[in-house]
Image (cartoon, rainbow, N blue to C red; front, top):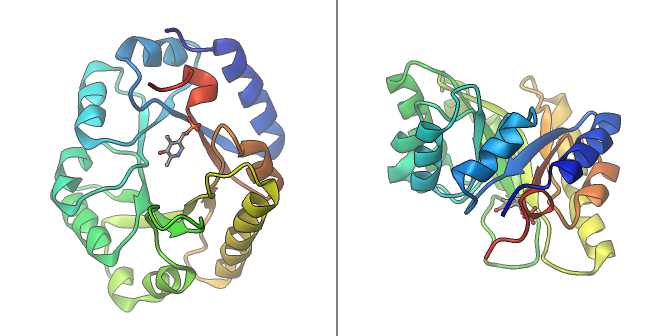
Length: 219
Ligand SMILES: *Cc1c(COP(=O)(O)O)cnc(C)c1O
């Protein structure tokens, strides 16, 4: 398989109008396919699995910004903490503490997004609005010097029902707006994938995570 560079360029053009950033989701795709997208000039990639990310990081150019977007277990944080550019899937205070600890060990500040559960499916991970707000306002979190919470990430329900998806994105955008009163204003709202990124952009997404439209279907 080869990456669809034409479609990549189209998406980038579309995102420019919205001032949104593209994360090219490369899970289960080969180093060669990622290199094609890299050679076309794109340098931000998202991965879901710790070991796979580590191997790709080692094999590919070092100016790539790697985002972790999958469920992250506390005991795996140390594998990616030396190099990860943004962990988008922080879904507990415990995980945040561990990331801070590993950030300290590596003498760096690790950027994070809080993953919010907006979908109807129980299976998806993420915090409720209330839990996220508690974390953002927590004095303990404020003392964590080796993390920086940049914003929120969400995944809409897997459904053809666009009005449902719109509702979910809208609720998250509203919550994101409310947080602008905090000292540590969240800047990033990561919503939108291949099937729903246009909808996400219309609801104020600042970052989309697109896999299959660029790399083709995953098997
Ligand atoms: C796989 C994945 C994506 C990309 O999905 P596509 O439908 O291929 O664009 C985006 N976000 C997360 C969290 C993912 O796991």
